[in-house]
Length: 221
Image (cartoon, rainbow, N blue to C red):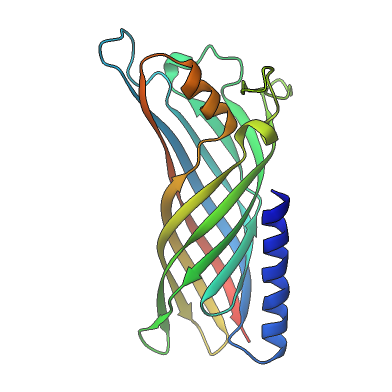
């Protein structure tokens, strides 16, 4: 995590230097809607609901971005809910309100359609750092990991995403534009999922996946 923060800090510094030298530089901010799912494939010979281990999370929050034509760096604060399939509704940790920080870096290839529209495919990484998971009764949720004791959201849920998608910049003039992005991808299993995957019987595989929809106002210098 410390290495990732150092890399993001270096990229922000590079962006500032690039902007001072008169490069293709823009910044902005807006809102993001994000959804994540963990789909478990279970042995059909074992009795029980085949979706009993599936989890989902839906979150929304503000974000900012800095853009260097071929590179986009973003940071946001998603707030949402972590849910499990109805067969796990008795688990004391579900549902839980989640608070997190998300930092990302994406390579992009802008393609000018006209003076008003620029479309760009993009691909990169996000890191979700979960700050807190809290129950409705204001208790902090704890999650099982290989550490042997239940741990907080930061240690149990934080993880790395790999995503790709497409974006569109709609320019109102030479500087002001509306940015929309649609992304989807896969993530690494978090520490809770690694532990559950090893400890549960009848599990064939596990697929953590999800996507984002972002809308922001930007200014190009």
